[in-house]
Image (cartoon, rainbow, N blue to C red; front, side, top):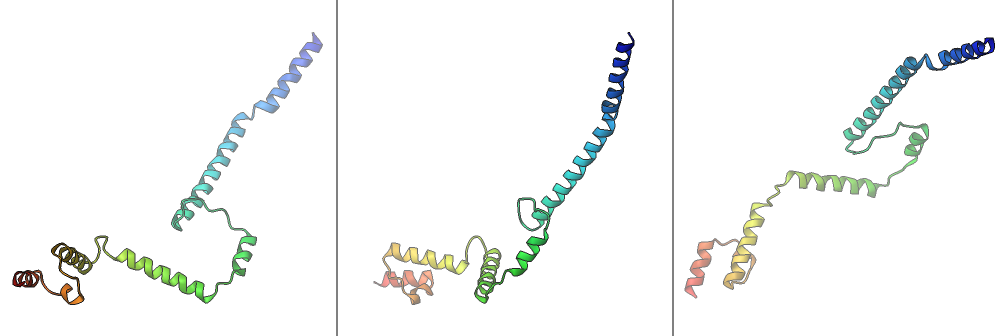
Length: 137
């Protein structure tokens, strides 16, 4: 029986050593996951603030040195400025188009329907003038 008692006490000490700190291990694991979630959220927010739908990775020294080595020529800078200007023009314009362009298109369509030749001078005449000229002929 003494051998059995020694074996049981040995198993109990192993159990106490390995499984008693379960709560401590669980708390440590939760703390680690909390920290990881906060870091991931920070990287996602940083990506969203830069207009990206992905999380950004942490910056490395090799990334910084590689970025500093990139040289842009003037044509690249000009094309970036031109693209930005075009983007701003599009963003500031109406989605319904320019009124004068729309009116011109409507006049041209009416002229085609009525068989009147589209000339630059005819684009600036009013609809009543066109009706009068049509009635005369």
